[in-house]
Amino acid sequence: MERAIYHPMALCLIWLLIVGCQPSLETADQQNEKTSTVVSETQAPADDPQIVAVLDNRNANLVLNATGNIESVTLQSDPSDTDLANLHQLAALKTLTLFGRGITDHGLVSIGKIASLQTLRMEKTEHTDEGLAHLKKLPRLQTISLSLTNISDDGLKHLVEIPTLERIVLLRTKVTDAGMQILKAAKNRIALLDLRDTLVSDAGLAHIGEMTNLKSLKFSTARVGDNGISHLEGLTRLKSLALDGSDLSDEGMKSIGKITSLEELTLSGCFVTDEGIHSITGLKKLKNLRLRGTIVTDDGMEQIKSFTELRTLDLSETAIGDRGAVHLAALTNLESLNLWFTLITDEGVAHVSGLTNLTWLNLDKTQITDGSIAHLQPLKKLEFLHLGSNRLTDTALDGIGKLTQIQDLYLTFCQGISPKGRERLQADLPDTNIRF
Image (cartoon, rainbow, N blue to C red; front, side, top):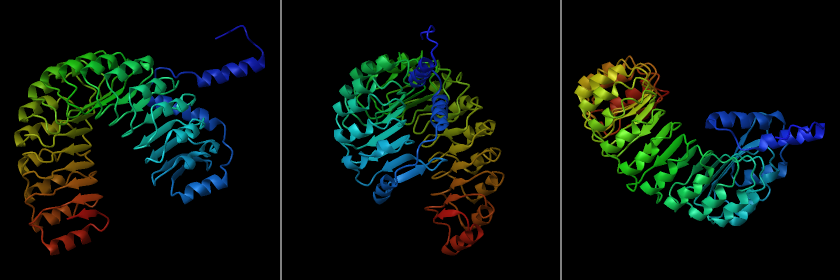
């Protein structure tokens, strides 16, 4: 900054430059708060009624801000490039969501004029890599999602030139390891990467390991395994890691155990055993842990009970039974518990009764009977309950009918519940959405 300039007009210009500068290394939430504050300080002019009318006629989903200006537009009924031509006149527009193949490079020319835009989501659109060049001058764009588009590594060359871009979703695109090397140009800025169902492999993770501001990373491919995960050990700001369906094993869990900043870990379908869980017991900040379809057993629950900050725990499709359920009692902060398709019986549900912060509980396809219902009575905050595919009868309905706070209740495939029992339960819970 040139400190020698004191003329008032020059000071104003410097202030404008600062507002438009690359954001500092703060959390995504902090950046959103700061940007929102800057935008709201100057009230935008009223939106053109003709533009609003056109959007209404196109069945656009519109969200207004406190002053009545449109701040979010969603077009999912076959939008076309012409639908975007005048959106730059909506001075408060922050979020634009588009679904469909009618959006091409011509539409991106129009999007590139929306100076207020912060979030752009495009799914199944037909633009090319070169079309993304029209977005490079957007001064506030922080988030871009390009799911199920034809974007390849060449398109990423344009994305890294967007000065404020922090969050990039590339779900089911054609990006490869070479693209991750391109993204390193913004390695101090990128906070979120969603690379599920892409062509990125362990070699790409070597580049991602240099993105030191990364806070959220998602994969779902067997191309990623233990060797690649080792490159993530130095990501000290990483809070959320998803590796669904990856080639991760207990060996890779040793590397994950070194990322002590993690608050959310999703390992669905990974070949992780109780030994792997032992390797991550140092992750004391974990709030969300998803282990669906892993090889974790009752013995692993002895390690899981140490994650006392957990809010969400998914153990569905595992071999967890009543012996492991004993350790659930230690997780008193739990708000969401998924035990679908486990070996839990009435005895195991007894250990859930003390989890009084639960708002969401799935016991679908377990081994419970009418005897479990009494154990659910202390769960006064419960809003979602799935009891489907269990050996429940009309006897259980008296207890279920007392759970008046529940908003969504599933009793699907419970053949022991009679038609009269269903009618009675619906009368007892008139405000509950019940699915039989």
